[in-house]
Image 1 (spheres, rainbow, N blue to C red):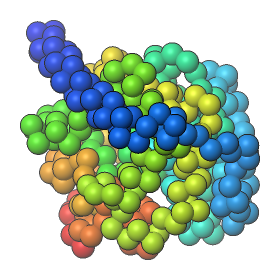
Image 2: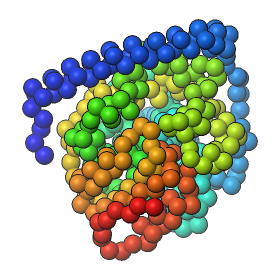
Image 3: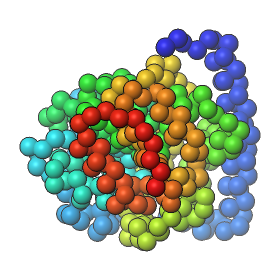
Image 4: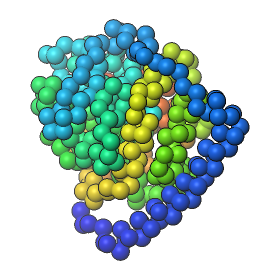
Length: 356
């Protein structure tokens, strides 16, 4: 693929700076208004969480472990379930989540796979490097390559959602030999996003520009004991459709993750790094077999981006679930698991879209 002309890159950079200024100001005003509305005591309220909640340590989800990656010395927390004799299925979470977002899939697929769900660098108990450059996409992908090898495998079924899907797309482009099959949930191929970016989508993605502002986004995320997490999962436009699939105990696992020192800053640094360290070679065709599962009630990403992503895959299936949110694997786990299982059992290549 031809590289983007320098003049276009300069215009894109100027556009990003302008949008960061606009939405950075907007987000800062929202943060100040929240501070004034609830008061400093509630704004800075934090609950001490010295140990993980019971849901996070339930043995039904497998065993917890830590692995030090050879290329970076970063240590990742992970949960593993299933026999080591089985093929590896590696799950990569998004924002603002952790390994626990895959709880329904862990239980379902551990019969036939060694299922491993990681906390990406910067999250929960995993290492939290301090520099924005430590969260470049290619660095996150290197983490995936390392963990596959260090778990004793040559390849895996790679499953990603949200930021985990961004990393998984990139892994398929940079290390296709490591992926037997790729399963993506509610994030488009990077080229589909760039080439189909509309004013409507920019408004949906306003938070990405706000996150370029220093310090303020971390304050907002942590305010009132991370109340924004509850809002993300329970309040429109991002809320789950089937809210009973996210109990208060489930929410506490995510809150515990973000209560770990450094997690808010590290998680937001993902967004800062992707703006500052863009690569043309992450706009190319994906050659491994791909399943895209898309919850159509996504408040952050338009359905048209799922359609466009098919143009950048050689071997792809797109499954749309009409009555599901951005958090599709938690919202409709039975449907998601069925689509995944059918894809994993396929032998022949096919290219089609299914609406449910």
